[in-house]
Amino acid sequence: MTQQRSDFDAALVGVMGDLAREVDALHAHLIEERMVLDKADAAALEAVGRAKSASLDRIDRLDAERRQLSDASGIDSLNDARWSHTVERLLECRRINETNGRIVGQRMGQIRQALAVISGDAPNGSTYGPDGAARIKLRSATLAQV
Image (cartoon, rainbow, N blue to C red; front, side, top):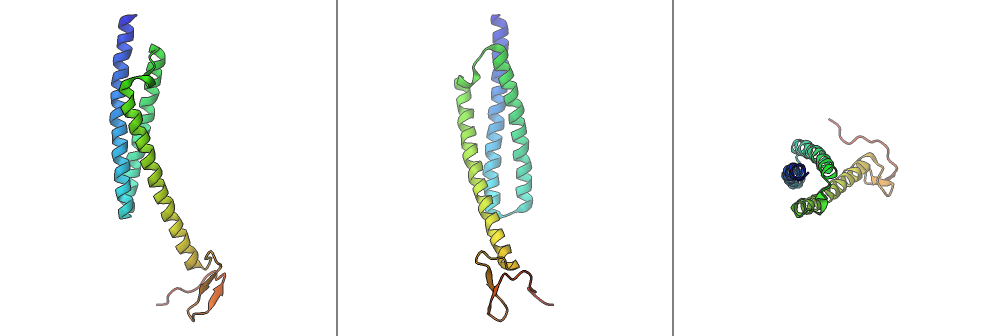
């Protein structure tokens, strides 16, 4: 039984190491996402989003493997000191992701406001027309003529 527990422990150490590396990769993707948000580069944002999603998928698979090994061996890997760094890094990833999400939300709000002004659905319900007079609920207007 000792050899089997040792084998489980070795496998668990390997999975936890893989998880730690993948969480570090996710952290790097989130930092990159933050920088790309500052540059407003849609193509780069899409690429980092794909990389972030792939990391999350790998983390999910590795964590499922960790749980299976923990259950099979009777080892409580969540209370293992080797796991604490990964948990701390995951919490940091959550904070960065929430910040990035707030930035995206603010930008979307700004875009919605701009579209509302352009379409005449401004929050106050009025805009100024070409003659300078206020227009109420202007639905569609010529913005430019060639």
